[in-house]
Image (cartoon, rainbow, N blue to C red; front, side, top):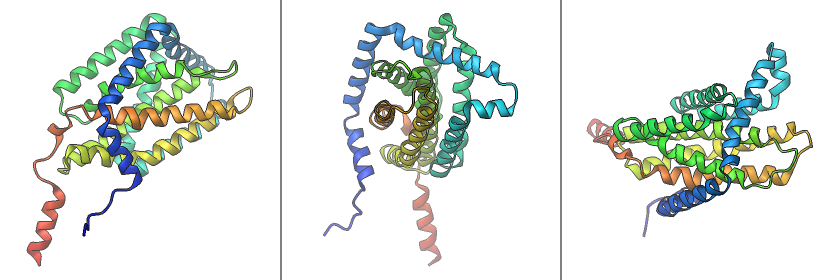
Length: 285
């Protein structure tokens, strides 16, 4: 009789994604290269348009009332997303996600619609991420380079969606990119925490991914709903559903499995803390 606890549906799904992680890498690389070869200008146009609009919006904000009137739904959705990451990911993951979201907005502000800066900024980010991955023993360092590749893939996929004339594609890209970076960094910190407790690499990734399940599913729903409400042409349920599905699939089918190729094992503690606690309890008895 097998007395072991059977894994739930979420864990079974995540385990299956890890088994097919090589397929995820191949699909991501082939799809990204194909889209970039056919529509490079469209992919680059997302960050340029988003940064230009963000700069214009930031310049028009004169006080808190103007800020609230211009972005109340997105602000509420963004705050709710950060709260979800705090509650389910832990304090360190929540703080890391806030820093990541702030850095995403700062990058848009620096870009400021410049076509000449878009490629250099991404190149610097990718090179620095690769260097951190190879030489720095830090949980976030293990995730930055996979995210850099995944972010390019996400931008390529968003380019292929059937955008309507009134759809704010730049806003969708900006919101999903910032939230994707926040979730990825929170996931990395949670994984590092489990590794520090002595959990094996695969188990640490699975635990961290399970912690991200509710924040991702609910958070992106809130963001997509906020964007849909602000759309000048009204709510387009089909497009909103596409944005939602694309992000969820991107994170759990690509980001999490692809990140497992990073050298997480070097962050693992020599002994498991749970086992040490169990030994202390036995000695007291």
